Length: 448
Image (cartoon, rainbow, N blue to C red; front, side, top):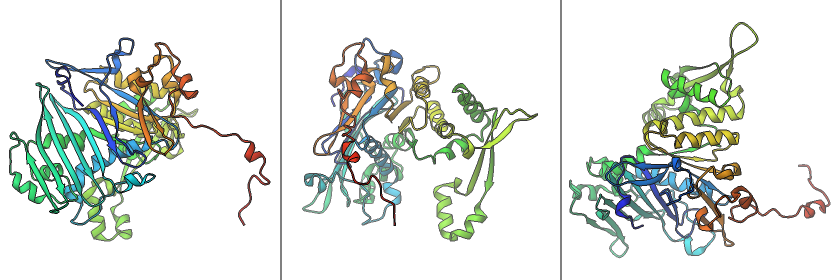
């Protein structure tokens, strides 16, 4: 992407673009952008104008819609893979260890081709463009560029694998300082140079690495296993109180939240070897802690009634699990990616979550919320700007295609939810007739 000079000042850490090629259902390059369009009829509160001598309009939230199996989760998984590979490839892997990357398999042209990714993001007043390509064996290409207020990208480093010599060609920009020779020799073929150089204390490469390790975050709302994060943060009184008020504002009748922490290291030591237990604790110090979450509700008796989190409704459990990551993102300016955010949530609650990221008093650090959903109510009444809405659909040959609503040029005031349900923008399932089932000799046979 070519960035105009007026687009290059940011005091926030924000995602601008994400591009993916040959990953799972995505074959040809698809690009997802959070740079706001020049709309005059959209919600201006959905845009964060990052401060500075020049300003960059960045969307604080975006929805990705599509039918089941269209590729929504593949896009989220691609973002998670990039984050994990950047953060962990230098420390977790070993020489010869395969890279767990998943290519597009429905077309033989792509089954033996590399996966590639490109991200455009900002850290303070600096914009970075980072890209890499991998196969299951090695990193094939890696490049990091930096742009300042002059709007010109300058290379920090470039790395390309040369099959003939089975080695890498490196090229460094004049501004990159440090022991480049040591970083280069220490970088394994199945690891990223950005990861390795950061592990070896590169000061200049620390900032882009921190964006991946700290500011890019992901949550799978359908997994139901993310409540641990919220319960851990509820041990801090201010956090517990804010989460409780958050739930109350969404009509959850909770009087209080009680967290009980238990050390289960002795129990685990009976099931795991000392070495494995030590490794697990090293990677996650919270591994040996068990938290019991109880919601206190007003009862008809003298005191409140205590219910364990497992006894609450599916929607309440989902909200509690989302609360921690959402508050964390808002407090620190993170980019939060949530798959299937509307799982067990009422549409009005989803609207409130988007509003929290749009409210400048709540979202002071310009955090971003990217989420996948089937909920068409978010398309009604101009609730979202047209540039906040993206669709994922599959072509006839099974390749996922990512398209912004703006490509369809909807009319001002058009009923977007109706147009979507009628298939105008793609991304919906085409349901076949029920007659073949009705004509079957037996609709369902018992298992013998």
